[in-house]
Image (cartoon, rainbow, N blue to C red; front, side, top):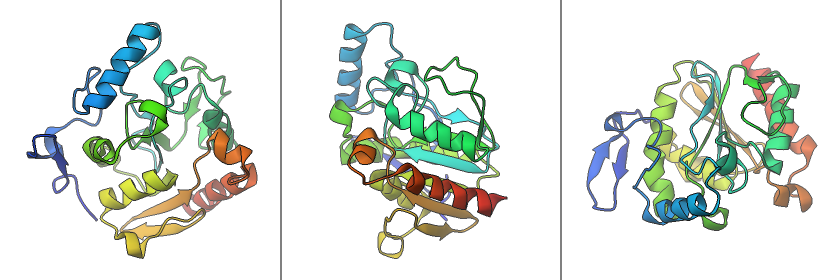
Amino acid sequence: MTTISTIENEEASGEKLPVAELRAEPDRNCPLCSRLASFREQARAKEPDWFNSPVPSFGDPDGRLLIVGLAPGLQGANRTGRPFTGDFAGDLLYATLIEYGFADGVYQARPDDGLRLVDCRISNAVRCVPPQNKPLPAEINTCRPFLSATIATMPKLRAIVALGRVAHETMLKVLGLRAAAAPFAHGAIHQAGAIKLYDSYHCSRYNTNTGVLTAEMFRSVFAKVRADLG
């Protein structure tokens, strides 16, 4: 499995820096992706009371489960400052986590609702909100070292749930898995050393409205995780 010392961050200049030189969370005014930084400034001007910054990971660094999404939603995590908080995807995700014992409390779609993750952490492949919820490949690559550094701070990590194909593909690169050997499919499980990677369709409103993902399909992924972790 790829380690934090071997993963490199490719900046726009082409210079490669070890992840060890980066922190697990970007600065509030992270300049690494100019398009995302510009979009962030536009959001700050339009909605000055929103969070409008790279959204940090949420949960327990000693947790055995990490959930990786795509990026903050404009009116969800970008507004509230907590992953999957304030939009439809969070409604389904947090209800499922509570059902399977990975969260405790009542989810009320705001960061001060008192909800606590149990043995679990949530992060995103890209920490800043992208225009139209679509980060560019270069932005995903640039942000990946923060995800790698986050994983390096989780000594007990045993399970990762990738929400959607983009999260799956970025996790393959972090974990050192070949795409041909670990194709994305809802409900698929891939082994990477001591860590299992579980695939799920993203819990977005679009996927659930179109029937790509049902609540039962989503719960089945976390039922597997719970059974494996005990």
